[in-house]
Image (cartoon, rainbow, N blue to C red):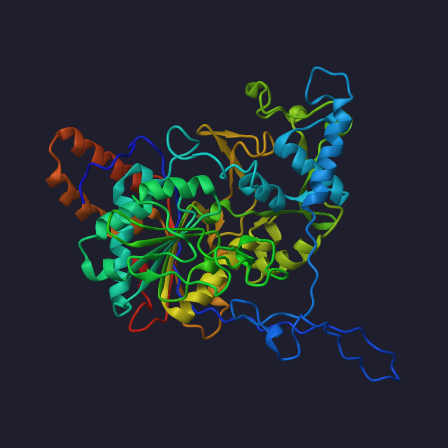
Length: 550
């Protein structure tokens, strides 16, 4: 590697990591449920209409070969939300006012969120609010612009110094050797941002021919803007047909007869979240850095099977969280409701108004936090499970509780995958051992702002509960998966040899200015309170006990 990759040594960096390996066990098809008959009659067999499977014929499988479930009905409510938005907009057009938000009129994501709340007949969870703010197809924070770097809202460790990505590469190569040097290994990055970490990883390992020949890269990102940026960073050429492309002589997995159509494995039961969908790659290319095949996916479930190394850098902190508060009524959930002023036609923030008058000003917000009257279904499911195993003295002293069920579900699925195919995974993020209270924060222009103000225009993130993630692995009995950490990012990088890396790079520098930048960048990475958590699992030949540099 050369020391001339651009970065900003004055920027701050993120904080904590986690590592994993496991096997994914396919779920069994769910049987159809019939209604119970009268006591004096035998139970009535469920009726399965023709074309919905159940008769052992060709209707029992989907085009991708997976078993089809019995009859289920899925309802798309997006059109209803849009109808409500149009009705509100049409009604507002008749109002005589110079302010676009007078009489409770909202725009953009605020209008969309308000329509959901009104359609539901009450507040939505904080997790739903966070999900819409970050990944709404039209108004989501990550979906259509570059939010990274000095010109964005925050800076990540790979942008601070190339040392970060190159050391991740060295760790990945070591893990590959420990696994017995399989002929194919899938390097998967969750939430790759601009693709800087992966570019440095590929550049730092390009002289390791055996590893480079085995590597295929899989970038998992829901943002079209990010995927375009990653394509440029990885120096990929013209786009390849994601369904029928044959990059570097490696045929991409296809579904016979479907051509270019991207559909879930089962269109009726594929689910509504990215984790529940199984889609073909949305883009394919070949990296000009080392010639590796690169595939882009909207969900990790779309990554083909095989030995896998997963890197999740500042990914889990963007997963939606539920928050609960202990009251005399028990654990009540914090929910997001339309503010009283907006409902009365007096409030609402404008996307083009004076920001300084809104940040922290609750009277200008379109939404407000409220508590549920009692225990919600989410609380009944998640709170007891998170508090299981926590010392009684600590449990009794908790007044706030923050849980990210999606983070735990993704970590569980990664563990299952690695248990079956072998490999390791590491998560690097800001986080603590947990249980956590209220850690949700919003950042815009490198400054903290109000979480509810101008939804979709600020980054929302919460600390990662590494204790909960580790417990996911510990409760997998006899799986062979082991968890390591958390450790600080400082300890992780020193363990991977950042000191030796810096010495080698300094020798290649032509000027004192280059030396100063290298040193400043490395100092930035190992200062502060960054951390790391990891897991390694039973793999072919190795991987147990020291995966990913632990």
